[in-house]
Length: 255
Image (cartoon, rainbow, N blue to C red; front, side):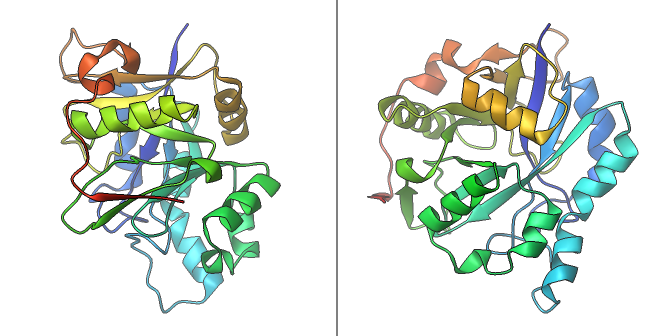
């Protein structure tokens, strides 16, 4: 049996770029065939919806509220797990395995560089995956790649064009990085979506991290998600997502 997990999801509670309350995702994701989701709202160094003038503990409580709302409302109908999307210089990383208490206990986390955050995450038993490594946007001026400070790369991001995903796929392959996929969903307008397929049920974020490191998860994509004929297929089956058609237009910096 195949279990599909959304790995990259934003709620209006935590991410300024989302307009979807967490609880509204539940029925939608179930209908699309997902067994579970990981809420990965933007942390305070990204496009966060959390006010900057609050004390640290209040900011953390606000930050995790989308995940907590969704988990409570979903009950046993949908597995809801917690993650973090963490930003440096426009390059963002998905952190899986830390929890609210860890965030409360680490108010200095934003003072750390990429490698320091990576080590702190590992000390907590968590993993760090670079999101959309070749993403280009009008507000970005550079691409930053850090293969030595991550446990893998997001090779399919449904919010990005195919050519950027293909660059990410080849980046992961050439640097022997484990591969992840997700939708980067902010609302219900995506026509294609992604996720990770596992041959067993994931019950906790630690299950997900362990399964990912073992290579048990397969990056998958679902085109035309509202079609009755649509199904999840491995990313590697799509030429458009794996074969580079053009190079990046932004300067690439390696760390």
